[in-house]
Image 1 (tube, helix red, strand yellow):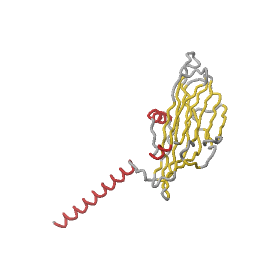
Image 2 (cartoon, one colour):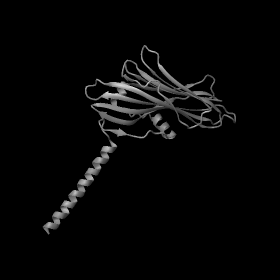
Image 3 (cartoon, helix red, strand yellow):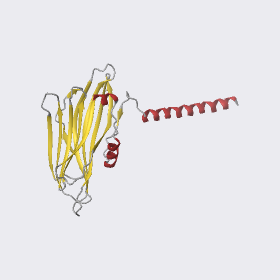
Image 4 (tube, one colour):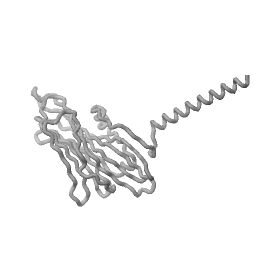
Length: 241
């Protein structure tokens, strides 16, 4: 009898340890620490990106947020038939790794500008245009002594989504990296008759790793030219002085 009770107790404790281990693993996966390696796939769904941008979701680490500010703006051409609106942005953490005490974080920051046509004639009524611009960038920092604060611009992606009948003539993709007191590094691409929802990539104007601070920064812009006017979404990062 004692042997049976002992066996039952051993089995119970074993199963309990498995449950505790599973719960600990699940909690660790759901709430990774700042020092944990991390990897995620970029979000590409239009509706989810708009939702995250409107909510201002920002997954940057505390060190990355202290490094500088991110801003998003919408630009409408003079005489445009699009209603005034605003641009919103969201930042997603794609990867975090640690090597020799240096933390490398990879991010994508997307600005979304959404507006609709104000015309009431049958050709333009109901047009809804979403313009997206995304910057891919990295942030390096030393989480110990704080001597390393560096950033690197990788590339930008550009696209639009149109619901309506207005004609889209062209799209211009631009990005730049700038330093105080120096001319910026610019890159641009003109796309004739761009296709809605197609992603157009633009290499970074400069891949150098720059120290954080002193007003270094980078930016990217998507401009869509339509029969109802032009609309642009721009996102920029400027390191803190």
